[in-house]
Image (cartoon, rainbow, N blue to C red; front, side, top):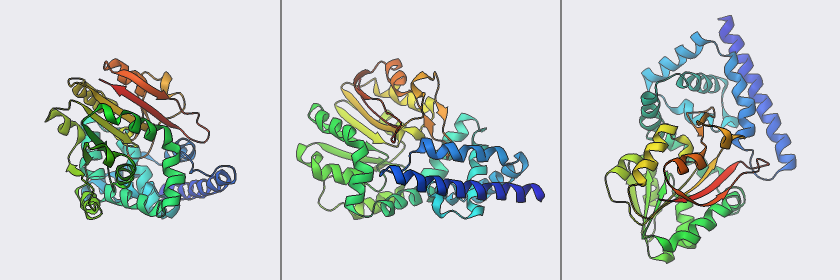
Length: 316
């Protein structure tokens, strides 16, 4: 009992520290704090959670299939202490799962269920105005968007991976993709958020597919395709990403454009490193693409102040 109370006290302190650091951040920067800096304060919390405590919470999570605790971790400013304790404890246990179980949990419990829906809806709320969306979300991804526009004429089909609420896909479609006369698709694991996207489709000619990316790629010819994603590939394990690239390499003229957060020193790591919440990873993307036989067309390394987004375009 005392151990549990101590754990909750430390979680409460960490949450207040996080809020304080965010206030300081916005004194100097207009863009949101990056995962790298946020996780600097989140990660130490795990050391205060006892093994028995975290295991008990994790077993309760699996039994009830209650994925909301994972989703709430991403909006930490609104967390209750109980939710925060659950989220941290669950993620600590996920670290020790076998690879196959991590993949299954990530796809079948997190992103395809309530957690994924809550995450995508929370992004809409965060960027409710076009001005805020352009300033805080699109501007840091300008080089990524420019690369998509630059390479669009090289392919016959455009596929957005992890399309979610489709806000980015709709924005790019209205800006330049729709004028290119290409086949356009959005792939997403969560069927509920796809329904939401379809309700807002309007007269845009976009096909939405509810599927796992790897199974989708394995089931069809992928020649002359530009496949892009931002904040999506970080949720794949290294083995999943390697298998995906291996499959894509079998096809002709496949372009892959990514805009992904990475930790400092990512390009020195032989293997991907665990970044903390809900199984997301800092991959050495340049190495992974080269090892798979891809040609690097563009790479812009992050400066980590204030952003940590890596933009890379590769061709099969």
